[in-house]
Image 1 (cartoon, one colour):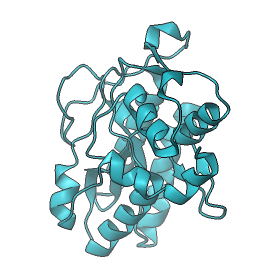
Image 2 (image 1 turned 30 degrees about the vertical axis):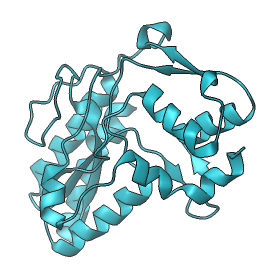
Image 3 (image 1 turned 180 degrees about the vertical axis):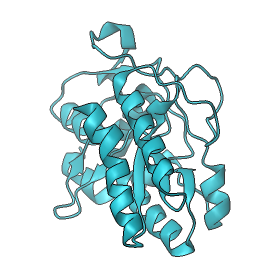
Length: 218
């Protein structure tokens, strides 16, 4: 299923759009990298996915590029945000905020690092890149490289929660069939240079969700 949806379908969709001269955007992932670097991954860094999801997403990237050089391929990381219709939090912040608000402990990894992508910023950046008429691969993510534990601590502070409820954990504590990259942080210099503006920090991204967090504030 992953190969069909993530690997084959993007190329088919790109071909249809190319025939009709419709701009095509393909969203990919930081999981195309193996996570074995202590720095940031630039767009042309070597790809080496370590699990099926990453391999299928990389296949999708390649399928799109084989069809057209005019597509936008945007790599994202740890996507989260708020619903456009209701404004309700979704993803990691919703889970952390609701768990803390209930007074329960939240086990969060300290040995995985990423540059989270807020969905609202992804949408804005996508439209700006389309308006600029550019193509190619870009990383769209936060400037901030954080662990889930760091991320959770920031959320806890935003809602005025009890920091003692944040419990340190490591990836090996969770029995999962697929490995995750240890450090899949994306370099956003290219998109910043193209658009002439910075990608947001995690603090700025969370501030943009202030209204959504109010439901969980102490």
